[in-house]
Image (spheres, rainbow over the protein chains, first blue to last red):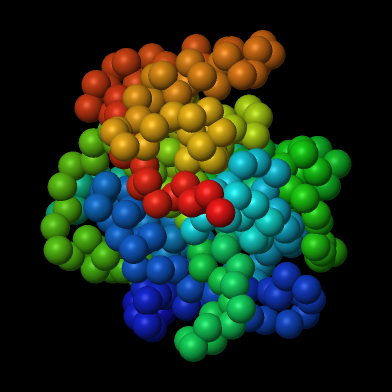
Length: 167
Length: 141
């Protein structure tokens, strides 16, 4: 856990495992505008999840996938779905925000069984800040019954399984 | 400092410029090309219905005694509008977009999901429409 560290367009830069090789670590960032959208809408639980689950890094990821099998138009590219990397794992805790700002606080929750966290990343060539991707979204999904710590029906969701780590 | 205390400090720092009450909202996620409709600030379980529609459930709705479904995501929203000739010159009506999805995907699961999603919009008139940037659509060569 550490303080907020702004770097260029990123509100945070964290470590992740390389899509090509899970033994190599890369840097990925969360853009200020992505984060500010959560703040703007007062998504306090999503922000708490960011600091509790994502900011510590995506190194715990057990699986990585490339390509979301769904339409995705970005920056004029009708096939932008192939530029998305998805990491999944089963964290020990979830984080929710309870109450308002002055009296509120985060709470650790034990996730329901068979839930995994997924983090979506847009991949790009290494930028001037050393980042190879931007964190775009995180959420819980049901776990696949045949591939522990992967999202259910992962083969329908994603174009390719890049790697899986045995723990 | 404990992890919870660190999370608390960082969250409060993130909202240092002001912290209002959460209100149901709809917004366009440009980089993932999707419309997100969210009616509760909670931990969300996303259930993929098909490549275009995902339902959002409160992970702890049984504890909060709140509604199970707290929103939905229309994925590939600008792509869908592009394919279906839906103009982005004016705000897109989310209910009509759900109708278009139901018309394109007649399978039972999608129909059921649209039946869940439409009341979410109907109960929250302020999130009935959303503006999708026109420049999301590619210019013909």
